Length: 115
Length: 117
Image 1 (cartoon, each protein chain N blue to C red):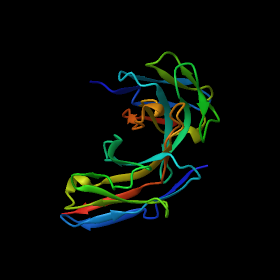
Image 2: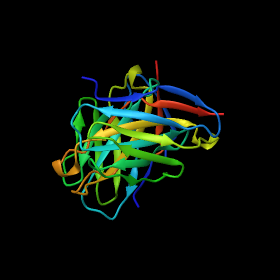
Image 3: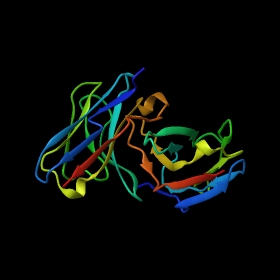
């Protein structure tokens, strides 16, 4: 039972480079999320997709784009990486809140360093 | 906007002791869920315990229990008989029950709990 799978686990980028973080879940969840975790800041929501075909901005969306490719996959793209985007990125998924179960399941995280 | 505050950046207790981590939150909504997540050095986010706001009874999971005070907007986590494996970052989190789809979790900044042998 894989749960939420993120790739890659580690990445180093040069300023200005682009990359896409991939996320897939096999739990048939409707909702998916991208968070970033910085020291002393907890996790902050970048973007989320409440259901297939929809995406919405979270607390810190600037510099990022997302694509909900299908129900399973939700990718995060950095078009022009900046040192301020050095962080650990987590993908998560959950059953739609209307089902009464909003526990989020997390991937193992991607440590991204922008130099 | 919802906010979650954890006022204890770090705590340290001896093994087998009981420890309480505090969390307060601010919301104007009535329907929401509260969670405690554990993040060990492996970085994996692990759900410890969940509380539905409409339930008055405090949630318990083995050695973990919460003290949920809705009027005071307080949600503390008590760990009994603490073990070395409990050493981790602990995050309090909140999510609004929107009905039309889950909004993202709002997290506190975390408490680093250290269990001393």
